[in-house]
Image 1: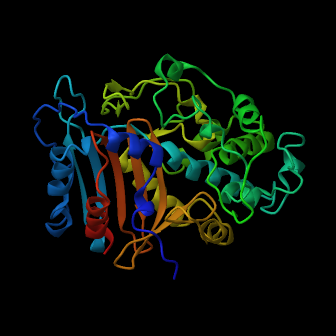
Image 2: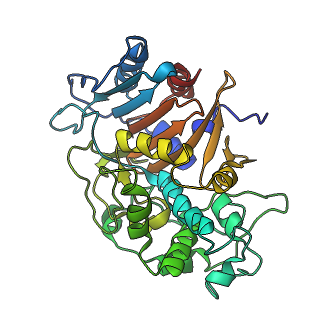
Amino acid sequence: MIKFSRWRAFAVSGSVAAALAASTAILAVPEARTAQPQSSRTRSSQDGFQETLDDLVKSKAATAVLLRVRTAGGGEWSGAAGVSDVRTGRPADPAGYFRIGSVTKTFAATVLLQLVDEGRLRLDDPVAEHLPGVVPDGERITVRQVLQHTSLLRDYMSDPGWSTNRWRGAERFRGYKPDQLLAQAFRTPAQNPPNVTWKYSNTNYVIVGLLIERLTRRPYGKEVERRVLHPLRLTQTIVAGDRPGLPLPHAHGYALLPDGRTVDATRMNPSLDWAAGEMISTTRDLGRFLDGLLGGRLLSPATLAAMRDTRPTDAGFAYGLGLQEFLLPCGKHMIGHSGQLIGYTTYALRSDDGRQMNLSVNLGSAPPSIDKLYALAGKVFC
């Protein structure tokens, strides 16, 4: 059994967490009514969930938290705490939209794996076979390595001003094309220590999006809609493109800067993330997506098994082909993906017995403690 670090298993962005923890500013969150749960099939399914959400807000770890869970026996609960807007004090809506960040990678990986099922490409094909001249040394990098982050390609988001996890001022409304992202990634060679075999890189999923487009001759987002959103009836999930806003209702995403200022980061052009993290969804739709994907509705059994074939990483989780696997202290496994864009942190996780935790956190003046996040996950999965 793989042992994962308790800290790193829930650490989505170390740089953002460090900035939040270092800041002494406190968001002034108006007192708000707690949003009532949307549904509750059993009494036991809601025990402790609302209290945990309320505590995250009271401790200034979040301005808003949205949660949908399914517990043992199929009991479902949905609720929220905090405010959608710190200026008005409007309560957060459990049905609200939010940016899902890198959970987008699971959608993109699913579409590319469907193309594997259709015989359009193979996992061990060199990337250069389908994208000639696009990726340096693409003759030795395989489709599987790109999906699993074992290509060791340089992450363009590691450069100043190129990450949606950091405040970029007016630049956050700038639009980007995939070839610009790859040009930034490949402008200097990757520098990897000789013992590194896995490295998370958003560049990989720009390549995934381009592979989808080259093989289908359609925009990758349209293929996500056609192949995943429509069959699963995910009517609350959006491939954002250049659109800077979110549908209503949604909670605002805030960022605390190192100088102590608080900024509203809700509106931004997410094309800097493209197939690596641009999508918007809800807790309801993320639950439906994981049920459909892990329940075998989207991929053949063999391809789904390949997607779930994870390897250890140094990041606190095991990684498959667009899927993360986490291990709780109680020994239970969760599979899905986490994501972050500035102002929004997401966890979409499921166990094989059907339990789920779909969580959106709008971070406050300090990141949630790992103990609190583990306690919440433990109520669902342990």
